[in-house]
Length: 185
Image (cartoon, rainbow, N blue to C red; front, side):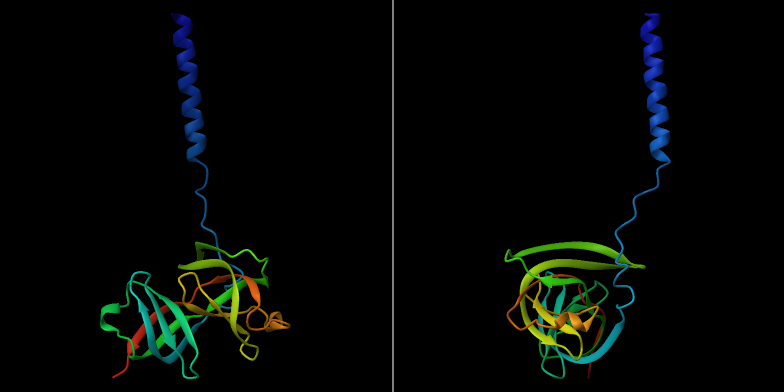
């Protein structure tokens, strides 16, 4: 009986020690999009709303040159007050490429949420075809994970050398995020 009490005391003490050692471990930090930090900047443009995906909170905008691009919209934007055809002043963080390389033929898609400073950014990895390129701007347009076109800023415009419309590429990027959509009168 005495042996069982000693063994039980030893087990309890080891559990207490293990618990306190575990409690002292620092909490894991969320993944950070450090690579994109220098490229993510707010852009303001006048655009026309081409589509509204209420379920996924994505608004497709048509720019002055006729280019369409999708932006994620936070809960602070009232989507009920916006309609297709409305002209808005859109302030948004552009989509920024973290990785851009030839695709391997296997279509894929993965979505994660990462942190850039205080803002949560959605990061997407896809293998998809290129819909448009703009070497002067250093951007590529691809079909995003919800079937919306995404214009993505490349870290280095030289990455577009040899890339043409229809090429299959593997792309990891932060998705464009609208901070304001103000309807024009």
